[in-house]
Image 1 (cartoon, rainbow, N blue to C red):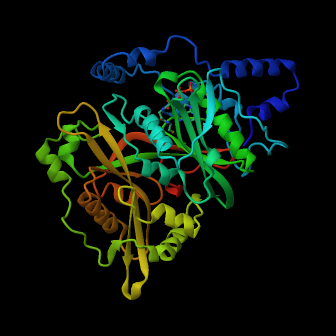
Image 2: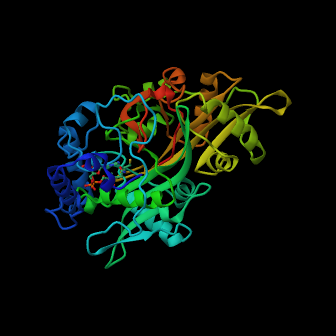
Image 3: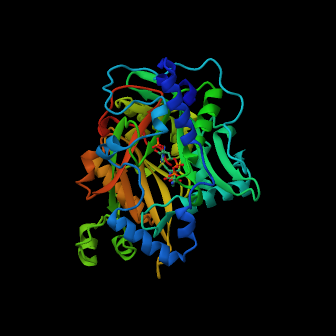
Length: 459
Ligand SMILES: CC(C)(COP(=O)(O)OP(=O)(O)OC[C@H]1O[C@@H](n2cnc3c(N)ncnc32)[C@H](O)[C@@H]1OP(=O)(O)O)[C@@H](O)C(=O)NCCC(=O)NCCS
């Protein structure tokens, strides 16, 4: 990855006119903690109930300041920051495979400058205090629903799992603190990941957990976080990244959709969970979402440590059929898939003679339900990887839903990636209005349909 200084456009531009424009752009891009009156500060000073009413109204009338959610909207938007980055531009038809810009000769040794009063801090996640600080930042500022009624509730264990896979580096857990009170107000992270893109195998990083405190939003802190993380990643000789976002940036490699399946319809109706068929009363919803009490696949059982090699082999064989997929080491397969309470569940099917024939995994994301008289939390299972060689995929997934329900998950999410479309409708998943766009940093290649995406990563 490269800093904006190496922006292709800039190096190509012979005229001073472009340079001046660039300078102006950089100035505009600077993070301005002072800036105009902060709308979030005003909002924050109101009681929480009032905030929710306002946010609900904004949502209803779609007046909220938001980044493009569709390609059409994106084409009207000016990306002041992303247009300076080595990413594929909208409208470019890509037929080749390779970096957008070649690596720079030297990577800047100094951290990217921050405005006065703020400092970089590499977060030491082995410190319980720091881990809790990160949980607080994310849980208070990572809103799940636009109307602010449901918020993610990442546990310290979840963050350690997501941020400390084999070969993780501490300097890639990049925080910003306020000097006066040391409050953590910004975060971005990268973890190493070997990725296969079409025929190419690349050492990359996965970028995760980008978060800016609500009070510092819309002040251009994000470009600063991304530039500094890029510098730290470049320092380790990594020049490509893969990341996902719900918004449209230049330019999605693939645009996938979330589908969800109610496991506990009563609770979802009671918390007014968006996306559920509002036309259904409770009785109908329960009938519609009914699942068997027990699983039916013979030999289905939780994955154990001694299954790692079998699971690794099943996954690798399956994943190389897609255009974008992780190349997992045995250690990584163990880290990401070996079951851990409230984090990751993996089940295998053991055939006659002890051979593993199928594997399915889902990770767990908890949320807090705010201001509800009865419910305080919600548990979502997110489909991770599935590979089946002997069991019908619909049967395996139905059993997975049964298992998730028995473990008290309220809802099950899956993306329409890989071969998931083959079971989504059959198992009464509903398409949600949330997309997940996949992006590559400093790598161009033709875009791909969701069924060619074989990469899922927890954020
Ligand atoms: C995402 C978030 C950090 C953006 O902060 P912000 O204050 O709205 O945006 P800033 O003023 O700091 O920066 C704006 C720039 O960041 C870019 N940006 C915004 N969200 C982004 C994202 N998720 N990924 C990459 N770039 C993003 C914008 O496109 C814009 O650049 P542009 O001028 O090229 O369009 C903030 O809204 C947040 O913390 N949200 C909650 C957590 C979250 O949703 N994280 C993203 C997970 S993918």
